[in-house]
Image (cartoon, rainbow, N blue to C red; front, side, top):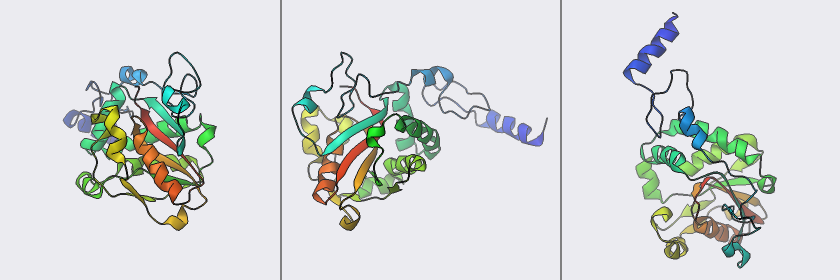
Length: 240
């Protein structure tokens, strides 16, 4: 047995690698953070059977959900890689709250693969991560949306530029009822470096889209600063 292989087995014995969701042991060579069973549970989204504007699943079909059919939005299109189901929740929770930044690499691979399916969001010149409130980012040590944007940009000719600031602390959208989500993020963002925004097509990047309220407020801020077009892409989409 080679020295490298022996070291690998010893490392696995001392620090066993487990599935992020079910905590089942993973084989030494496994680079995926999920076991095969949990990996199969991920639910990729496509443009089929989803709202053409916000990307929410529409199991019964139709072009638009009720909200998008009856309203106009500044965030023109929202697309997501996966449905926000339990295995993906575990991955995102582990990244954000256990500071496992190594999970960004496999997430980035999934993001880039899913991005290929959505030509309607391919024209952006700038990728803008949805910002955290500065105090929260200091506590966490990173902004997961920034990390995901840096992974996604590897498959495009765009640039990642943090053109938004969160100027007001807000509660996590996932913890709030739908009726409070718009108010929660209202006027929570400010555009930075407006000369880099004017006339640009921008793609917002975030980890999870719940109702789209945060993305819409970000898009409003960017459009007011002169953005030509704003769309969004997220790793996960919560079903409603």
